[in-house]
Length: 464
Ligand code: SAH
Ligand code: SF4
Ligand code: F3S
Image (cartoon, rainbow, N blue to C red; front, top):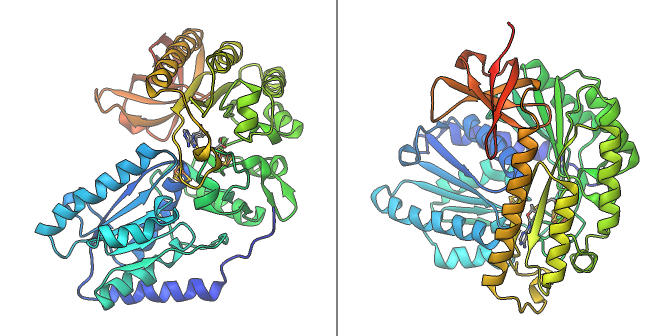
């Protein structure tokens, strides 16, 4: 990974000036609503966007209808993500008819797709601002331009991206925090659009990351999630990921998790960290994608199923209680029934705590989108159904094996269905619901697991 330039401070200063200019305007949006789609990286970006909007004098609207600025932070990893984003945008056209001053902004991964910005400009002229993943930090300038030029601003940069530091932020949670450690991806798995829309890998410096962690810790954050498309290739200021983790661990934040890891470069040092670091939770999301070596080769994943199984073995040897989760793609072009059965076998062998399963979705500009694909959709649906059923049975067995255990849970929220119930995660990442007072949100409680549901556990508070 190359060292990437950091956006210079004078450019950030310029953007701060634009924030002040917008704030001082009489006619400008006052209430914003952000719709964040896709992965945690987009969620973290949305926190920076909210921070910028607040510095421009706006506050979060209680509902979408009450907002006078609506921003879509889009995802395009699969076709349905893209359709959802476009569907939402079209709905806004109607809203704008009754609310002509509404400012509509669309950014994120979808706008960064080739030809997308031009298409949006032509077909959705009611959108006020379209920007990409590489120039999100210029939002203040673009919003100022929309307000002063009074015509749509379409700005998507076709660059590899830089590292941006020092953006304002408005965090969603008081006690759980996302921390980006790197941006972009260089892996070019043949099905995946992320490297095309997020640009080349670039790492933040360990100093910037640690500073952010300390800031969160000072604010009372109990759990942090380090984020990157492939954290295993982190390389900031010469430090590798395992080294960075050790440094974060020493800060003493009670819980650390990270995602996502690529199996091809999960180092022994990182595996060892699961046995050594006090605050690193016993949980790892390690997407396998497929069980057949031939399919893995055509996906350009650069590991074999054998190698994957050996990683699982090492991880469980180091940390017997580790909760492993995965992503799996069904119906990659040319996948035979036999190759699919190899995925089923792998799932039976590994016994993931949970697996996120997807039917292959061709993405324009990726290599896999050009491959001949003669498996009918109905066959792909049958296959994914079988895989989901298998995984559901394994998940239920895994959860059932937790019954009777005593676990420390960080309470995240009250149940939306039953106000007397609260819930949070065990160290291994299982969600537990139990009777309790919402004043416990953000605190640790000891819980005895009393029963298992399909995806979550139930329990009761013990002691205290
Ligand atoms: N960086 C992460 C994954 C990011 S995308 C990693 O490498 O593991 C999240 C998941 O979406 C992927 O793991 C993959 O399973 C799925 N995915 C990505 N592109 C896809 C496509 N074109 N069709 C179906 N699923 C896809
Ligand atoms: Fe996509 Fe592969 Fe990069 Fe993950 S590692 S973001 S699946 S290209
Ligand atoms: Fe989607 Fe972009 Fe994340 S495509 S999955 S939001 S990196």
